[in-house]
Image 1 (cartoon, protein in one colour):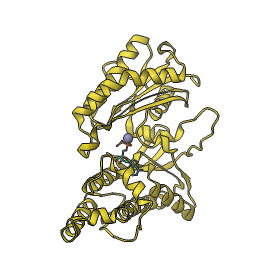
Image 2: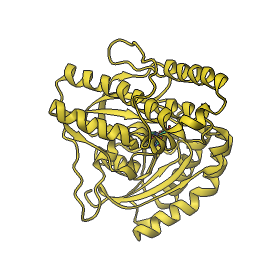
Image 3: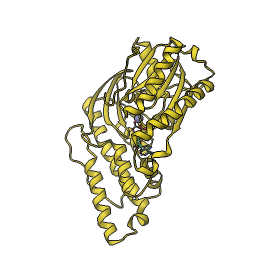
Length: 338
Ligand code: KG4
Ligand code: ZN
């Protein structure tokens, strides 16, 4: 089993990705991004599934080639079953089934969110990456989810907190859209924030009890603030972009880390990780490390290349599921919510 060769396939949103791992060691990871959504301010599901259909075969072929693995060498085909856009998931799920049928390799379904957590367990040939020790807390922040997880074992976690409305990535993307930036706005805000004054503006923070999050109020207060400013000075956004981005990013990061700190205090767990697309954010990464130092945590940052959607995390999560004997039947169907 240690030498099991796994093909991972990820197609839950707008990235088509395939990866090959031997055990938990990554041999290849290929990602085709879809630029077609940039102009729309968000992912257009119909366009996403069409683009997946175009990308899936070249992406898988390339991943196998890079890993120097033939389809008949595969021990399992792991795929993202959900959550995600059904039309997008269908492309990856159907392709995985066809390949499993043709090669006789078992199918392994992976929950996309579990994949993001398992990105912390990707090994690279010749490199040792530090993996979190169990149990650990994981702040999972992506375009569709914001959750606090208590991870007890590789495939076992408890959701101890989550957002009541928008996800953190959505807050970045929607505020970016209001400022006229292309989708996805998170990385754009991150880049501009580096040159701005993060104390210049302040935005309302949610008053949610316990370990819950909320980002819809922040988005609305940002929108109203800009509307009022632009009414007085039409060039307000252009003239203050870096400060707006820095201040907004600081607010989102403070909201995220405040509840993470609370979760650590409540659970007494001091092994703490972040994961998901927003964990690529430079402001979040540095504030998380600072907070960890202050609180005496062992902090685990995923390598940048495994923060946003990728199939490497699906292959490795699939490997752990294969080890546990968890294979899927050929009639498995994608799920928008899981
Ligand atoms: O995990 P992911 O690739 O896809 C989902 O599962 O949703 O996360 C995508 C989200 C988007 O909202 C994107 O704007 C955000 O992650 N994101 C970032 C950064 N890179 C990606 N947000 C802030 N700063 C970044 N550097
Ligand atoms: Zn994701």
